[in-house]
Image 1: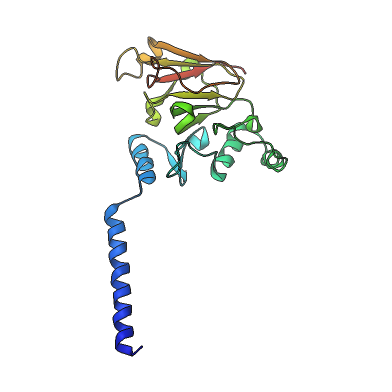
Image 2 (image 1 turned 135 degrees about the vertical axis):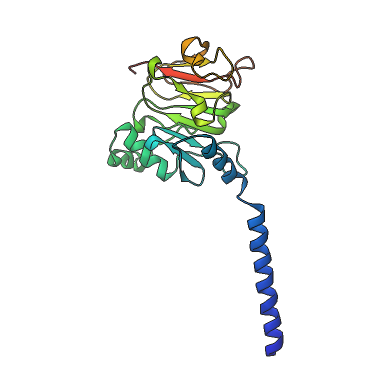
Length: 218
């Protein structure tokens, strides 16, 4: 191939690469990243810790998104596992030992297991534990009610999993748009017993959860 043809070919490759880069830039972030960006824009204090996860308050709450082409959020990433270990107060060595001994760090629904203590509970965007997963392990008395709106998850729960020893009390707002009404005069939706789960909350309760609190002891 002569120098002229080589130069023309190189120029064509460069032009093609430039056009592809420009097209990708024009298309903006991928769908998963856009979903994450939307939640970060609507909430405060969240930090993206992996390709598909957001954490608040050092991992006290973690939201996991399904990966492209998947219906369910995957088990916690290495970054989330690190935060879960710290949040639950267990040692990293014990988690590593459990993993090496083939103990599951997450249940089939993706919610953390007792390897990280006995208090983990999760809420899911869709039935059958699909869509986004939002998880906690902390104690929240009624005076410390958790409002789903803080995580852009109000009226989005269709299934749940309680892997811990606490009771979880889930409520709905008595006044649309007012979080305070979920504390002062809420509508009781359901109670989660320790070590239980529900693949679908039922048509009458679907997408109605606005807040929750937990029992004090497990």
